[in-house]
Length: 148
Image (cartoon, rainbow, N blue to C red; front, side, top):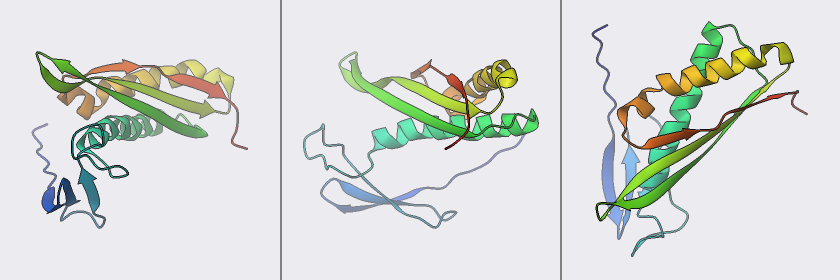
């Protein structure tokens, strides 16, 4: 398959350490800033670090849903906690690991093994995860129940 897709993002500096992200393909804008951990950082605004971690978690979700649909696995809910750890490597900051904790709720225990396999396939197939060098620590859980 020799397909190429492009995703356009335009950033406009706003003030100090704050900018606005826009895409001609999207309706919403996202304000982005240096995180408060750094000098001049701003609280309460999405940072590049938040966006990086969210790209991994949202890619997992979209990949999982696609594989689950294809595999005819129905599920009640999916929540994904993700934590990115920033550390110094060779004296420079980088996101050294992302802990990805998806929790899947299914209604029937007989599909628990299938659900775990699909979660593992989704983590392996996620194109964002495959595009980065950051270590992904994958800690999935499958719970049997229904939404209250």
